[in-house]
Image 1 (cartoon, rainbow, N blue to C red):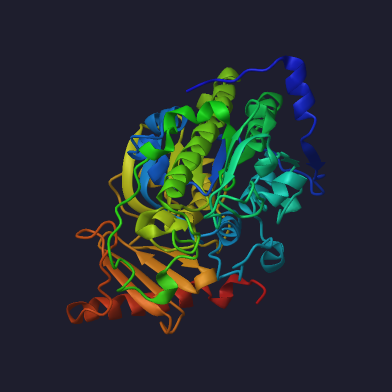
Image 2: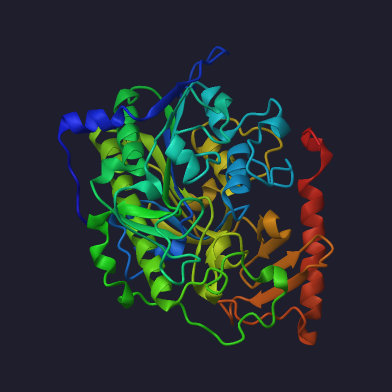
Length: 491
């Protein structure tokens, strides 16, 4: 991995481009409890599939800094998001509620539906913690919000301070190519939610994630003497795939990238709603462009990993490793050509599954195969930091898994794809996907033990009708419970 350095003056000049917002704490902060009071460092990547990380088995994309965290923490192999795109997922784990419970199915802040109920960070803030976010924690448009340096769908009440990290995104000087809907190669690099690869000029600090890491390092040293909840939101590898040129050589020539297996007739047995919104066909990406998309994605992951390393090193230099719980995750997964699907939104494992690593001082490293949800972070971190768990939040305290990773805390993970009106129940035996609550959009059922890559839909197989009915009833019960009116939310 290459490390990038810059003169101090250059760093200061670039950091001055970070937009800063301070939110005054109107209520008096209570005295911090005298029992063990860990700091919380919450690091989240955007649009990151667990399959791209070397600690999850990737042999091409090296992520040494995330791997080091995994080596000292608990790495979860069956973690699932609650919404398969940014808005509902982030609103869910920050609020403590499933997307349908608070009707947060788009890109708006969940505050209106939550009323005065505290978000995860706000709960820590009201218990005496300094809380801050750097860049994207709640939803923020990428690349548009990063180019503008705005707050996106943020919740000001969650933070003592908040910081945005502007970046050039697809406009970064360098060698850029639009891969999506550009079969004749005549389009220049274009903006928007589009597959673009830019091998950018300059070093890490030219871009948003480099500035985010630098600001996080500054905040760790500035607030090392009092409890903090620090959210560090990296926007890579979200499109556009932009990283300094120095991160690209391991993935070039792009022709050496290996694409997932393509199965003839792969879509023939799934409902129309199960075909993802981005495919090789509708994006008009030939094999060359598909391979370059994978290489560009991996370069973005490598760049993001280097920034994670800077933040973790700052924690060690500040003497805070033994005082800080570190979480690394993503808001959802991402397809890199599996089933000829690309990007997020689908409810297959590549999109609904997420990397999750939790490192707690004094606890042994482990690998945990229990089903868990991002929704579980709020209650779990509250418990680990000796805070009360707010009543009615819908996640589970999974802290016991950090001592005994062989335990199970859920019989199934639940995720939604509101764009497709889709629902997922995923356990160790089956992945059950239903489109529309009345199933009028179709059903998918995969035996994940016999068919881990989910190629054969069993939903119409006569031998599996009892299984389909079992999961259909289970979904009805799940939706009923998560919408119960005793939550006291605004409907």
